[in-house]
Length: 166
Image (cartoon, rainbow, N blue to C red; front, side, top):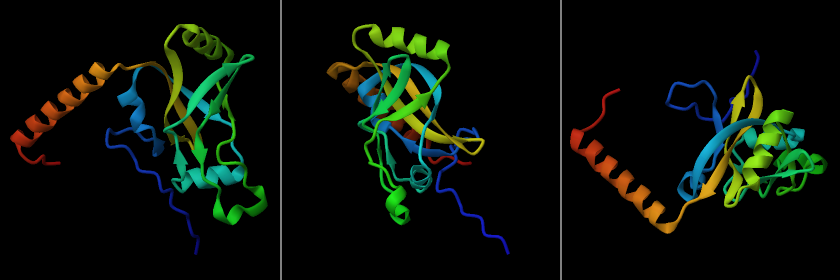
């Protein structure tokens, strides 16, 4: 009998096929997400196993364009427990894989004042781990309050309509 290891990722409810492995929920609260890009990420084998087990945290992460390459900083991937010697540092800098045109575009976008590259989500695509990054501009305090008020109004409207069937 063959045993298949289940992926602990949850499939999104919006009908897309990519199971999400990690999400940066704080990104949309703290930033206006302007443009999104899909990037490959250079990982070791134990990091892949750890991410598939749901042990990645994108919250404090950011990406930087350095010498014509894009690197991911501040993203925490917990060591894989059975990994022993093969484990690497949890907060190491990881290279992102994008084509040259996208890298030039990201470099120009981050040169503008007040913009940065923020990781939004890690997901599986055709068995490979991909990272969605966004060019982001920081929100001010009143923008955050406005977003919270809008979310509360939408929640009240949904509650007034009654339970959803589906």
